[in-house]
Amino acid sequence: VFRRKYMTLWRGSLRVLMQNKVLSLLGIAMRGRNLVSGEFQTLEAVRNGSAMLVIIAEDASDNTRKLFTDKCSFYEVPVYRYGTKETLGRAIGKDYRSSLGVCEAGLARKIIEQLEEKQEAAKAEMEERR
Figure 1 (cartoon, one colour):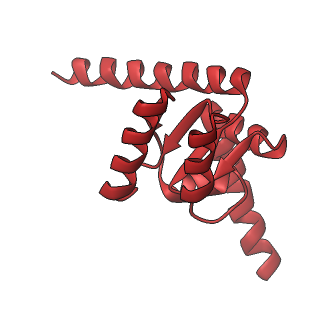
Figure 2 (tube, rainbow, N blue to C red):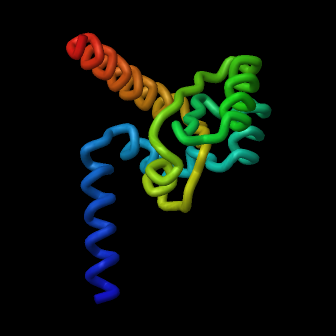
């Protein structure tokens, strides 16, 4: 029973990752050690210039959101809001994570492309509803 329950959960999360390229790319970045997670590590990566992209969870606190938008605008690092703490954490094989920093330029560029495509699709969908 224990094994079946967790295998079902794992398959469900794998299905979500396969459908979502952003989360898949974040997992690849984590396995390649090109990603930092958590507020302190992400903030340090922004300060020392190694972060090429910062992703903040949609359900992150207002203080966290303000902290990263201010720091990233000062250090000229692109910042995006995407997913929930749970989905970001699950994508990289960790617990809840409110912020992630991608430290490799190629992966960051590809993730930004995917995020912008998703934003454009969401805008188009909102315009269709009107």
